[in-house]
Image (cartoon, rainbow, N blue to C red; front, side, top):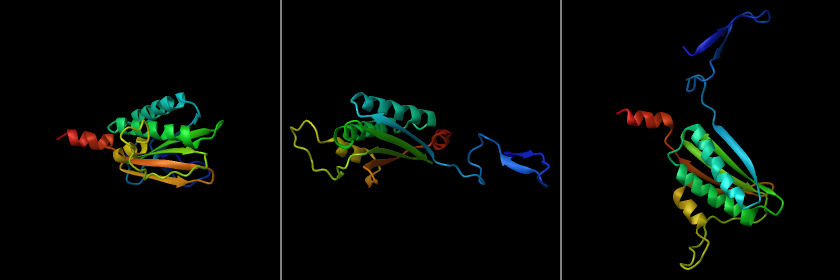
Length: 171
C-alpha cells in the first residue's frame, strides 16, 4: 500500500494516514496539473531564452515527443508578443501547463492591440506573415484570451505521456 501511518498525537484520537511523497496516480489522490511560467524582457534575445525555458521544462517533465512543435510555437508567439504586444519597457510571460497528456502553452503580453488568429494568407513574396499560420497548423487547438490588461495567446498540443509511451513500447 502507498500509505504511511503517523502515530497518534496527544491532540488526536486516531492515527492519520497520508500518501507517501513520490507515489503518483493513486486512485484516492488524483494528479494535479503541472504548471510553470516565466517572464521575459522585451528584447530580441528573450525569444531564444523562451525557447530554452520551454525545452528545459518539458524535458524535466519527460514530455519530449512534441518538443519541436512546441518550440516552434513559443518562438512565433514570443516574437509576436515582442514585436506587436509588449509595449517598450514591459515584459511578456510564457506559461506551460501539463494536464495528463495535454500541454498548454500561453504567451501573455500587456499590449492593447487585439489579435485575430484567422490571419489571411501571406503573399508568396512576403518576408513575414506566416507565423500564426504555422502555429495553427502545428497545434491541436489555439485561441486568444482577452485579459484585464493585454491578452494571452495560447495553444494546446496533445502529447504522449511517458507512461503511455512505455506501455506502447512494451508490446
